[in-house]
Length: 379
Ligand SMILES: Nc1ncnc2c1ncn2[C@@H]1O[C@H](COP(=O)(O)OP(=O)(O)OP(=O)(O)O)[C@@H](O)[C@H]1O
Ligand SMILES: [Mg+2]
Image (cartoon, rainbow, N blue to C red):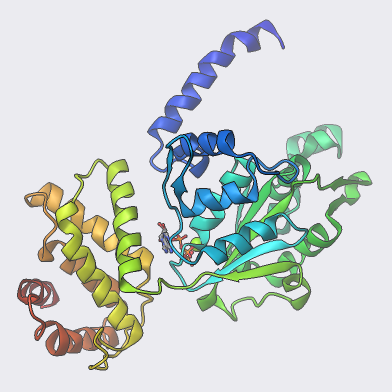
């Protein structure tokens, strides 16, 4: 290392640490660094090659628990334990993991936390879109170097997947089915041969032990770009379900709202739990097409009304309450958010919403304030 490099390093490090602290949304491995460190210290079970934690500890990181030294591991995923166990185990095999589900079922969230717990790095990420090129999965070139010196390893720009292969880490591909089919198929060699050929150099990159890949795909996007069966066989598919009960969904929403509120400096709102329950009830009834008591059928709007949207509605409501109200979450703070989530198609969804409002909300005990607030924003 040169003297100049030595001199600048601490400064750069300090800048990096500060920006991590200030990050609006820190990576999972930074946000939960203390939990990961405590888990690694307590973990005496065997770890697969290059894993930071044993599969048991990774599952505990996701599902939560208390360690012998008293450290509390917060639950990241609320749902069936078996799903998490299967997902974690898959990553220790030679098959890749595909997280499938309707929007807002925490596919991205689980993928990030799995990568953070297994490899300590959730950033080796390819975002799938209709325009994702092959280079995003394989490698690209630094054209200045390529022109100056010709093709060489120096001129090659590795993709996140290639870096994960070389480091024995976890790569992530988001929204796999949005990627055009021929580009998706680039993954077949990577996943079955565990190599990435570089024909321009007559070389290849061989995946180091510890490499695996987590892809997410949205159920609703089915048919956009179907996964080829050749590629699908390389994956173990784990379907993430919608929360089974209203209580589970209220639990998820309150936890996430609390976490997000803290990072946005919003006041904590334990008094808001009634309103959270109300948002979840409305979303579930409209999604299921029937009221909680099973008595009244209701029409479903075109939007997904996912748990993730319920989280946004409540977070938005809390911000309203904090900045323009008395800090307590009230019906008027969530009404506009609910309307925005439900009425996606201005014509058809508005009719669905009005009908729900008049037949269900209006008649319900203790929902008068909420009914009035909704009427006000719906008019
Ligand atoms: N079962 C759950 N446990 C914990 N958090 C959940 C759960 N379901 C949803 N969430 C929360 O919902 C939010 C959105 O999740 P995420 O973005 O991962 O959804 P997604 O399945 O990737 O959706 P999309 O298909 O739209 O990409 C996250 O903040 C996550 O914490
Ligand atoms: Mg996602």
